[in-house]
Length: 208
Length: 117
Image 1 (cartoon, one colour):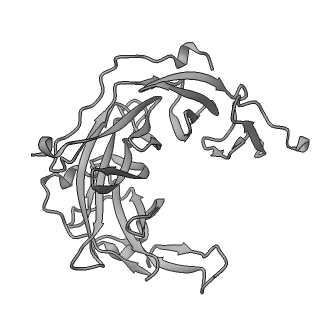
Image 2 (cartoon, rainbow over the protein chains, first blue to last red):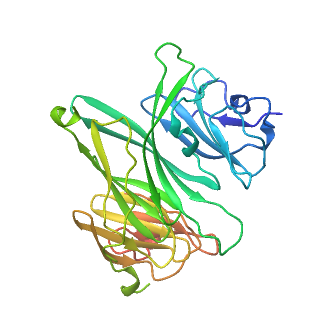
Image 3 (cartoon, chains in turn green, red):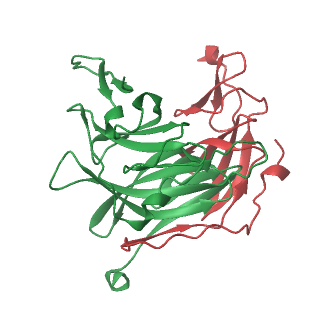
C-alpha cells in the first residue's frame, strides 16, 4: 500500500485526470510507506517539480535516506515529483556533514516557501522551510528553526535531485509562516513574533 | 487586541546564521521583532501592509514603516475561527465560528457587506 498524491488539471486542456503519483517509493523498504502523511505541497517554478513534505509519528530505526528519526518518532521527508512524467525524483544521501541537522529531532515542518532572488549574474532559487519542535507535554519548551536549502536537478541524471543546506537560523519558538516582502526581504513568524531575513549580495572581491 | 500587546519589543537577541559554502550572498536575521498576543500562523504581504492570522485572535494588520520596523494599524475586533486568510485586491477572506465566509476590508479590516456591491 502506497500513499499517493492526486493531481487534477485545471484549465482549457484537460488530460486523463485525476491521476495518482505514489510517494512512498522514495524511501527504502525499511519504512512502512502507509504511515507517511503529506502535510505540505509546493510547486517549484524553477525546477518545475512538486515538492511534498511528509511527516509521521512512528518510530523506526535510522536509515540511509534523506530523513532523520527523532526520539519521539517524528519522521520528516522531502519528496520531489516530476508531475509531467509521473516520476518520483530520487535524492541520494548527502555527504555533507550537516545532513543530520536538516530535519532535527522532535521537529516538524510547518511551512515552506520558494525564494528566488538575483545576485549579480546568477538567479538563486532557494527552498525555505519553517520548522518547530513537536515534543509531548504542554510545558516542554518548543524551539524552531528556519532551514534554507538549495535544490537543483542533477546535471547527469534528470531523475536525481541535489540538495544543499545554505543557512539555518535557530528561533526560540516554532516557525509557523513565511512570506516575501520584496526581492531582498523575507518575513517569518516564530511563535508570537515576526522577524526578517535579508539578502545582501557580495561583491566578487568580497567573495574571494 | 490592545496596542500595548502589539508593541515592538526591540532588542531581543536574534539567532545567528550558520556558515556554509555559499558565499555569493549573505542572509541575515534582522533584529526587528514584533510580538502578538498569540502565535502567528499565517502571513500575507501586500505592498507595505502585512496581514497576520493568529491562533486565537483572527486577523490584524501591520505596516512596514521603515527598514525592519512595524506599526500596528488595525485588527479585526471580532475573534474568528479561522487561522488562515485569503487576501484579494479589496478584501481579506476569513471564516467565522459559524462557518460563514467573512470579508474584511483590506484598508481597515472592517467587515464588508457584500450585498452592497
